[in-house]
Amino acid sequence: MSKSDATAEEHTGEISLKVHVLFFGAAREEVGADESTLELAAPATVTTVFEAALESFPQLRRFGRSLLVAVNEEYKTADAEIRAGDEIAIFPPVSGGSTSANATNDRETIQSQDFFELTATPIDVGATARRIVPSQAGATVTLDGYVREWTRGRRTLYLVYEAYEAMAVSEMQRLGVEARRRFEIAHIGIVHRTGRLEIGETSVCVSVSAPHRHAAFEACEWAIRELKRTVPIWKKEFYEDGEVWVEGDADKENS
Image (cartoon, rainbow, N blue to C red; front, top):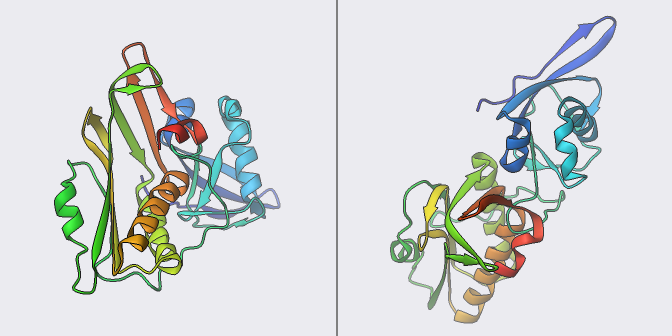
């Protein structure tokens, strides 16, 4: 998917914006396309884009007001202005929860040994954990999230994870910064799989090193909770009797 090539132009005396919009997860399936172009009257806001999308793709109305809008890989408030050149993304809540539009992208305290990655290949949990072991750390806590076979009484055959890749990495970096502000940690690393995963395969690995184990435990638990709440990654579960996108708080009990 290409970066937005939105342009402003004169049209019958009015200024209009042609905005390139990306769709993800269940919203992409409802629209039947990865992207589209919307023409908006200027000045335009996030609300303008949202309303234009519902007008062009009424099937999106099934989501109610739960759809999220990101501008240039950041969550924005409804009144945020849309400008020529912005990249717009519309998607349902991420797999583990809802998100806040007040997130910031401050990365001033990301350390060189920290890492935040998406991968389509199997995750080596042990190797991931060893990447954040500096001399000043006394403990490393690692969470290994993997695909289970049974979910609420239904047998899972496999999962497929889809991500808004650039924004997902950006959001993981933001979580790394926030983790440093909240906890006395040395380093943090997050790796998440995309694509098809079989039963037992690792979907996400979060590793935190710290001088003391208490801070490492707290930071690791906080990071996975926030990752499932804000990072734009969606999970589709394939069962013996059907398939479903996991949205919003539906997966909370399985965190």
